[in-house]
Length: 358
Ligand code: NAD
Image (cartoon, rainbow, N blue to C red; front, side, top):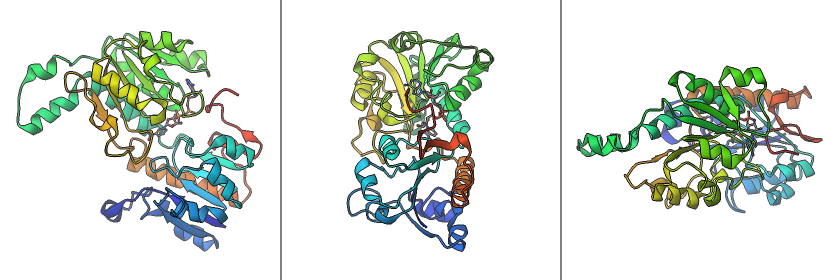
């Protein structure tokens, strides 16, 4: 079979660090295994436009592997051209780079390595919440500049203790975020999710479900987004909803950039409606140099905790999603059942309940 993989370019780092398995250079560590079984394996980071490696090679590929960190966008148009395609594998978690409804129409299977990086992301969310609430980034920048003016930082630095923290999406990551925040003595933990938690799971993290989104955001000091990108979450955080946030709230989004309207969020930070925004996901990746999230600041010159998309691609996570990808391929080649939690779309349609209510 012809297997394509779209991964990010690792450069010198990937040559020096073989555990960067998710980079083009290290090819998820599956080349010799695939070739020993007679499969053809083509790997590149070149994914945009009709002359790109992805667009040219997808026409007769059987399997496409792509990573959310450098997503090969599998649009309906592109899937129409992929006459032999049977399986799309996400090396990681989050398959929104595939037009899932088109994949259903075509009877494709879409699988991801569920759970492979949920701890990695939950830890990043906790870090991002703390760095916003404690005004860390401008404090560090001040030190690098050679300055020292404690009051300029302290005037916008708070404790997380006593604050209300809420997650949009209480699945694997959202749940783990609230679990990890238990010792901080927050005032309350809230969640908004059409899939409610079981009472014992809710109790274990002291979480209260709020069913109306505006009501939910109006109660939170910190909102963290941990839901997949789909028709029901695209543009969910926009100027209209931001009006209902508490003034000075902090927003952390490590789910998907397009869940937020980029301009509306940047304007809210700039005006001080949001005290800060942090995350690692962008509506286009790689993010263009002029993207407003690179440079936005609150009126006190802080409130920006943006980084490139890396929370779920720690070396620990890469090992897990590389081996999970291999397991999915092995099951596929041998007609063995897939791990149910990994199935986003089976030939018969949606299996997951996380990509919108159907
Ligand atoms: P999950 O499937 O375990 O949980 C997602 C939860 O979101 C589910 O409970 C689902 O019901 C809920 N949800 C869906 N639509 C919703 C909506 N409209 N409103 C409220 N809740 C909604 O998934 P997970 O493992 O927790 O991952 C969540 C997302 O995080 C992924 O889909 C991916 O986009 C993102 N992610 C990012 C990184 C990263 O590196 N930044 C890594 C892994 C995952």
